Every structure is written in C-alpha cells, then in structure tokens.
Image (cartoon, rainbow, N blue to C red; front, side, top):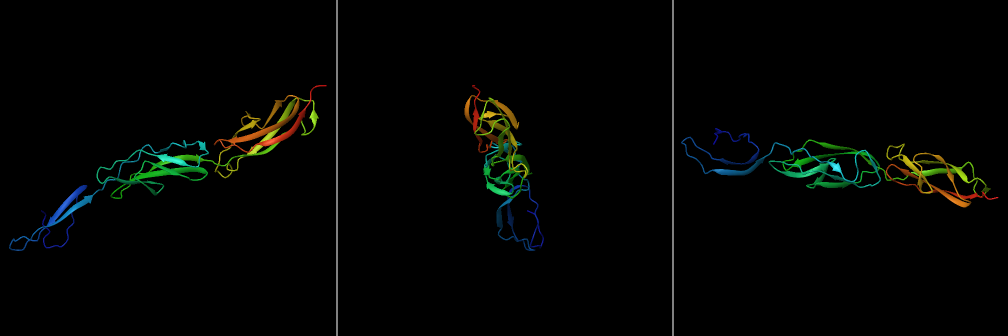
Length: 231
C-alpha cells in the first residue's frame, strides 16, 4: 500500500464505489505490526438522473379544474452507485414513490421535483407549471325581462331576457371566468341576453352560470312570467 511516513493521517482520493483500507505500522528495522482493516467505505459523487415524465393525471397544464386534489406522478430515476433514497416535491420528502397527491388551494400553481440518492446528492430540478385549481362556483347576479313583468299577463309570447354573473376568483387570480350561461337548461354561451319563445301559461325561468372549471352557480329564478296570446 501507500506509505504515509510518520504521519498519523492520510488523505485518500477514492473513486465512486465501495472501498476497504488496511493500516500497518512499520518500525525502522522493517518489522510490521498486525494490520487493522477499515472496510465498507462508500463513495458516491454523482447525482441521480433527472426525473422524467413529471405530470399530473388529474390536472392538465393550463386547464382550470375543479378537483382540489392534484395527483402528481413521475418515472423512476436511476443512480448507478448508492441508489435512489427518495424524491422531493417542492422540497418535501415524499419517499421512494412514484406518485404524490397535494391540495394546493385555488389558484395557478407550479411544482418541482428532484431525485435524491443515498449519499444525499440531488438531481437537477424538473418543473411542472401552470396547474390550475378552481373549486369555487360563480354566482348569478341578475335575471330580468324587459318585456314581461312577473305576475302580469302579457300577450307577447317572446320573452326578452337579460342576465349577468360573476366569478369571485377571477379578480384575485384564483379562479376561472364564466364560460357559459344556461336558460332553462339550454346553453347560451357567454352571452348575457336573448329572446325566448314560451307557450301560453305561467312560467318559471331559471338561469345558471358555469365557469371554465365546470363549477355551476346556484340557479337564479324569474317567477310567474304569464303569457296569454289567445283572444
């Protein structure tokens, strides 16, 4: 082995892997002591491979979703020397698993992941961006008719309606906008007015707002719209 002279310490540069060392003392007459062994010295200077396939099965990137549980998954990383110890999602040790569920709250979120080997070395960070969560429904603010007054008989069979709604998360950046209004269950798109034909009789008209995440408001009701077209 290598001579250290009379020194009582020695710096050894070892390659990655598992190593054993032995130490003997030799006097000036050349007599050697019994050797002392130091075994199972493990060196790993290379981080794991970069995590691939980091995605969400529940939330496509850039799409508002009403599910509060974001399911994350990824492919296994490799580490040729010490092996994978765990994965970290946003700095949290989630164990040696390939899936993790988080509840980040309403809003637009980014997630990152690294693989960490037994030696504590981390892979390069991988980012999953633009995960959108919106669990709050919009609200209907108004539903009125310019042609028919509730409780008043009218000979006009065409009812002109105007409506409006809001989504509380839009201004705060934590929710999606309204993408559809429905009148009596029929989609009207994002429009806020329309004309509708009704048969003779007394009618209850309902309006519902739905946002991009699929959250639907409570219905707003316009009651007692009375139509009589028969002389």
